[in-house]
Amino acid sequence: MLQQDSNDDTEDVSLFDAEEETTNRPKKSKIRHPVASFFHLFFRVSAIIVYLLCELLSSSFIACMVTIILLLSCDFWAVKNVTGRLMVGLRWWNHIDEDGKSHWVFESRKASSQENKSVSEAESRIFWLGLVACPVLWVIFAFSALFSFRVKWLAVVIMGVVLQGANLYGYIRCKVGSRKNLTSLATSYLGKQFLRQNTGEDQSS
Image (cartoon, rainbow, N blue to C red):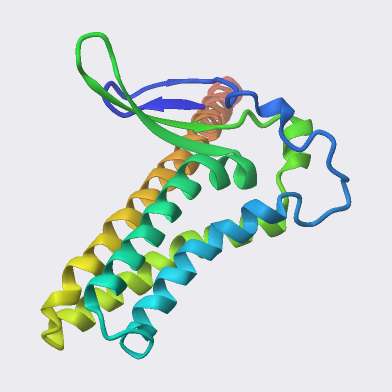
């Protein structure tokens, strides 16, 4: 499903070249993309570790800040452009049309039987656990830095909240948007059953 936030239009599409993903992977493998799964957690966990241990590892605040921001930036790019597509078949992005208007697009793979096999349950758990847990930690760090008056670290933790929160929001929109058709089908089915039941009762009376 492709969802454009600007006009609230929805349209079923295949995720770009989705069929080529994991076609030749063994079906019994629990983690079909080990490299993507590793880097999905590596950058974000490394940024948290450096933040927690930076005062022990280095006395230079600038060096620690630059290292954390680089790790957060690499994580944002990898999760937005690579791991989301490979691990759960989701992608979000932004494009500017010919009129200069900005459009946010949220994509998910069509739910065909072949593509459902390519999505590993283990990878999905790793993806969503890392996607949700790390932004929560950065929010905790933000409150901790604020209440402990560590003002110089506030900009760093806000960067962590913004970058990782943006990916979390984008993928939640992809996930929720992909279920819109199911919701509309369920509503339509219940409506038909209700009308059929009422019509049957009217005829019997």
